[in-house]
Amino acid sequence: MKIGLFFGSFNPVHNGHLVIAGYMAEYSDLNQIWMIVSPHNPLKPIGTLLQDYHRYHLVELGIGSYKKLKASKIEFELPKPSYTVITLAYLQEKYPKNQFSLIMGADNLENFHKWKDYQMILENHDIYVYPRPLHDGGEFKNHPRVKWIDAPVMEISSSFIRKAIKEGKDVRFMMPESVSDYIDEMNFYRK
Image 1 (tube, rainbow, N blue to C red):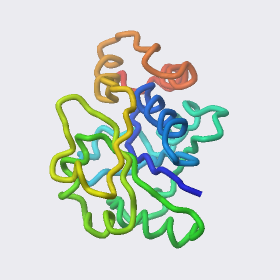
Image 2 (cartoon, rainbow, N blue to C red; image 1 turned 120 degrees about the horizontal axis):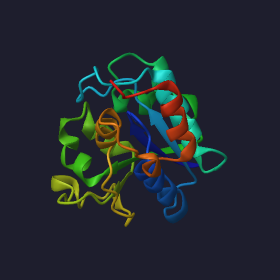
Image 3 (cartoon, rainbow, N blue to C red; image 1 turned 180 degrees about the horizontal axis):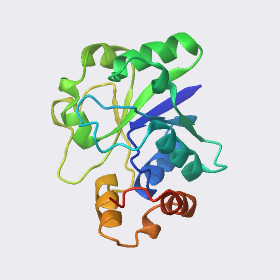
């Protein structure tokens, strides 16, 4: 089975994430997309993250009953900070019959050379790239392992949603209703 791994803090998950994941599930040759909730991205500050369990639960709520997407907390069990190359090796060992690929935006592809052991990832895994405004993928854009998927351009971010909630704005239409309701119920991002 071909599994696409869509890593993220998902702090919170929003319609942009879900549109990209759903598009990859329906319009690429990937059989399933695993949305992997990262406990801590080494390139991001840790201070603004909701607790791991809450972010994972929000992803589960956002996915709902759609079978081609799956929430994953696999990185919660691995050493911190999380490195994709280690997660990929762990998954390949645990699920040897699956073929794992990465899903990322063109902006992340431009910074791919900063990732731990990025050469090893490129040798063993395909990378499915979706467009991002003003980004062309940089030095890796024509790499044979890079597959461009013409997914919709989503100009929505978790940081925008967090800031808007803190400012008292109603952003319910930027997330699935179940996600928005849980954020309201738990009073997340208000402070």
